[in-house]
Image (cartoon, rainbow, N blue to C red):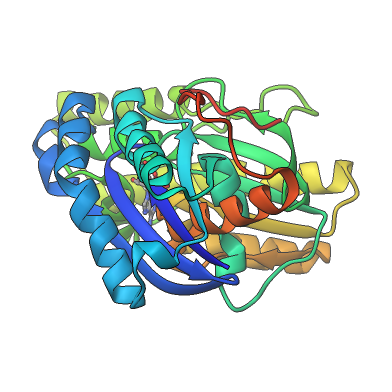
Length: 333
Ligand code: KG4
């Protein structure tokens, strides 16, 4: 079965073609240069850019896969969560294509794409597994029971992990998107330079909170400035990153122990972080838990994961009704 995947939930316009779970093409038009000068995604600019890019990106995905639109058996498009203006561009485009060409359409929850993105890599987990999804918009722990059955166990109460990376990068004068910049600056830093706070919340809580950590970094920077001490950027980045990684890893392991699950999977933009993968690998080994992470290109937003999740949703539930709307908060869990 040939599936065309379309993704436009935030600031990346993406399209991909999958044949029986094999990726034939995976095209991405990244908007980082549009939003960099604002230090974050500007929703209206993102929608306008999607409008310009969606058709060329889809054409390119079809051409790279060496297929025509008439060969496509199913269109899978992100329906939510995300920025409404951005989602409307990709989902309306997918609806129009599906309607005019008589192709079945399935709306995909972006989180399902991230939870399943690990299947696009060589090493694949088996169900059930715990999935930590960490990106610019979310920090959530899901119990994945099947390709189309997910249970939300915990989520962020304020900033998402990626959002914290981006905000800390901005206050340190690093460029957008901040995650990769903070990670690169942290390589030569000392993670024990400042003991930033870890928000464990209540003992059995799988929820996250990163806004206090961001404020602690701001307070540290202001204190250093007041005493005219130079900023040890690499040490601050390493200490901040360690605090985020610590909480993400230990809460995921706690969730795995509590639910008696022996497989852990990560996904979302922050899961590209090398230190996070390093600590997960070590701690999972110690705890006898199998650990899987997608290849870096499938961590950040992409349409291959939407096509994959869409294929499985369609196989279980069939095509969508024609009057479906987009949504801003995930419907999973
Ligand atoms: O999944 P994603 O592409 O989608 C959105 O949420 O839009 O994730 C992007 C997020 C950004 O916040 C970015 O700073 C973060 O993932 N990110 C990273 C790394 N690479 C991307 N954070 C930490 N370390 C990285 N290496």
